[in-house]
Amino acid sequence: MIQDKIVTKIIAVVVTYRPHLPRLNAQFHALASQVASVVWVDNASGLTLDDRQTPHHCIELATNTGIAHAQNVGILWAREQGATHVLLMDQDSQPAPDMVENLLQALCQRPNAAAVGPRYMDDRQNAHATAKSPFVRLNQSGWSFERIPCQTNNDIIQVDCLIASGSLIPITVFDTVGLMRADWFIDYVDTEWCLRARQHCIECYGVCSAKMSHSIGENPFYFMGRAFPVHSPLRHYYQIRNAIFLIKTPWVSWGWKKALAWHIIQKMGFYAFILPPRLTHIRQMVKAVWDGVIR
Image 1 (tube, one colour):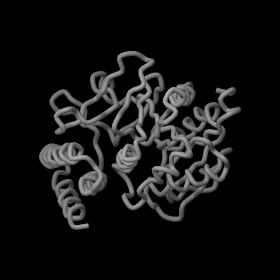
Image 2: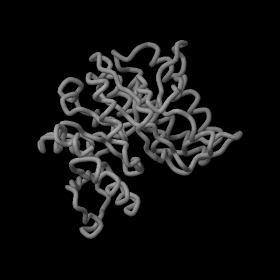
Image 3: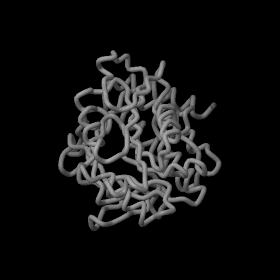
Image 4: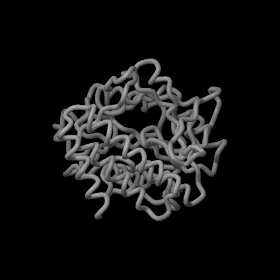
């Protein structure tokens, strides 16, 4: 990795909102030996000066503007510092010691890639759920998404989208694809960006040798032997509203539109009838459908 830094300058963009500081510091420590520098963009968490003591550059936003705007702030700062690549990170992710090195090697093998991302696991879920591949693309039926497993540790898998956290992106890609959709605030921001990159004939790839621990939502909810990620009713609002926004986007393929519509129906049914507080979930999801359709 030291040799790679001679020809590349990777800056990690870490976005936070009311972070768990010991966990965040552990992430900073894990990143320190893997990237040239870290920029910490905080979404108005109300941290004190002592809380924000860090050897890395910190940008504290005056209000919570959402993850997409905060990522854009960090990306633009990294560009000003002469970064050749940015590594996007959420506050709940912990990279393996060689994650960035393996991502960079994958980019060398796929020099025209929009982004490469790691194989992540949520350690809180049971063994069956944790073993599921995080790499997703639309299946041949066009009605649902399929998970593409890693056959070997050396696999580099073409995917439709990556989660933002752990994504390594050449800075020049933003000149072609553009920045994140700040008006979406949170949820499906990374999906929209990856699909937009595909519109420009630039693909995203999952890297099986790159590992990361990543917490999805709150503590998982177990139902019929399966673990489901749990989000707040407000997060379900953004998920459903932004999924509808994505369906309404003209250049999104019909396959993706159909699969997203079916996914919304499944999500609304499950969280409305299974997960408490049901009434609050229903209200937020109905509001999401209304706002997504009429906007």
